[in-house]
Image: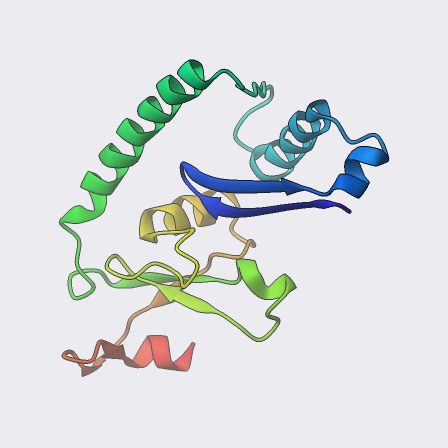
Length: 156
């Protein structure tokens, strides 16, 4: 209660309601929540982790620069891929907590509507959690290459 997060990569927005602060919510709690959530989501691939929250502008800019370099390298890995040359797409149902009947199909050239996950993110998420919100979708036969329609995607 009293917090909201939206965004991805280095464009994240975290809101904390005044009522939450009045009830004792502190910066420490953000770190504790992140720590718990990262263990919950990725505990299968690590045993220990640490959360650091930076508040000094110079240090934040330095960390954001490092993150952007990693994002650039990841983007370069997927850059040569096309929808036509990839046989597997991925579903994304992350937003079903507030849009219960919604599902995105993510391909190398198309992220989800929210922009949070690209094809590489979904592939990694599926490998980490095979029962999670990102499932492989076999593209199947081409219905209309110009419109980007494939039988397997439509049936999904």
